[in-house]
Length: 146
Image (tube, rainbow, N blue to C red):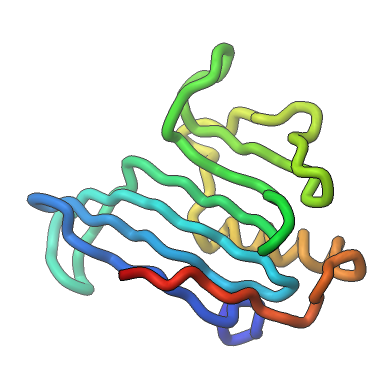
């Protein structure tokens, strides 16, 4: 994503939060003023450092246009009645902030996306909505941590 210029910068950190547990948090700045806020918790299953094999057990990917409204959010932090499990996707009208009909939609344990897949989805969204964005060629400022 960085190689092609869609992602310009990030403030992602990966920190230990307990025995064999990690937290990935921060933001990614994407073209069009799009920000992806990441909150992801992982368990180390085997290995260590860069060779560790990990499994995500809780996540939230929230994408929005800085200074405007949400675009989408994937998460498994709570369940909805009628959904098979807690994995779901919210979709918003980025200009009004309202959820679109059918949102939240269940995506399921086997259908929730990786961060890379969310970025690919947002790249498609960007090209579809580019002309209406306030700064289509710009990157948003990111929240500084610490």
